[in-house]
Length: 455
Image 1 (spheres, helix red, strand yellow):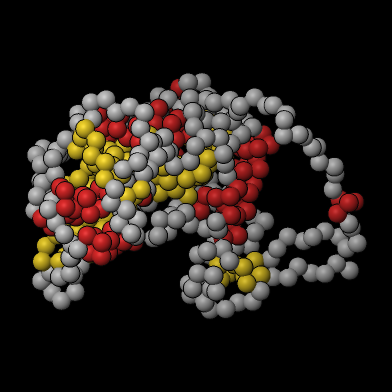
Image 2 (image 1 turned 180 degrees about the vertical axis):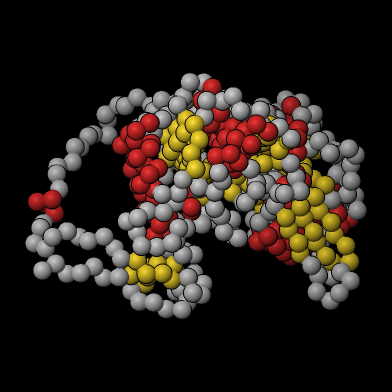
């Protein structure tokens, strides 16, 4: 007689498995997040793997295959993030905060593809078909030949897709689907994992490109088990601040193109508009030089993007100084502050420090260290940085400046927008820098003493 399946308990917050129920998850520390799951049976007793399986076809590393075909989406920014266009039989997971514009972006993309001749189905588990039609009318997409459906039953959705065989299927969202094969509530770890597995398998088996919309947690991560991100081919995040019209489509995983690529959009009354030159957009409000403002020549994937780093340093009215950071890694900002105090003798004790990236942009690369230091010194000394200068470079704990990659692309983008000077680490690899006055600095003390007379 076959041994019955042993129940296990999965955490809805992190997906960690436990052999018995406990009040607090040992993986993430969350309370009351464990739910019982029954794993799939291993099959009849006595059956061996050799009897059940079949021989796998093997190939050599030298075998050449044609690159996957691409279908242009009609939106250049989406094509950039996907690596050149939509790949048939691919599975894409899109996450983002509620109300950020995920459904709007996908509806616009589906409408462009449908107008281009690709059979497209949009299935919503959160809205009725009438609500999707109202959004399409507001966006001027009512005449697009996109077929709509409102359903949450996974079996019915798969049956419909199998019968229609579209080129693209949009599922909004994965957390609303439920499978009658899993005894759990919609949105649970078991349901999300089962629905994602079935849809990804269907995409590979039938050659249908599937886009799954995923909710995010308060930490900005896609809700549900992390295994879903491993199942799909591409993971995209749609980011932005509610108070800003700018939206960033960011690729964090892409099996068919470069990761960390971004596409920039602007939310307008008629939907999302593409921004071909995001650097000019993020710097559009720099009307006159002001203390605490430094321009970073950064890189987002393969695209150079210039953003403004804003700093404010003021006496702390209370005993403990405040450190408020928006759009940057607070840990790296704390490191730059410590290096300025320890290596450059520039004290920030008793001073409140506020840092912000203009336009709602999020910057994570180490090359922002030098721009952050320049903005902090400019705000502390109340001296404006020359408006024609950009900054980029990594700051080490010893205070030395380390070169970063893509130096020429950063300078080219800065020169295109009218900047004529750049502060960068000494030893940066440069083939040419026409029209740019370069201020190469060996360490952070050179910036503090040479430009601001601090320390």
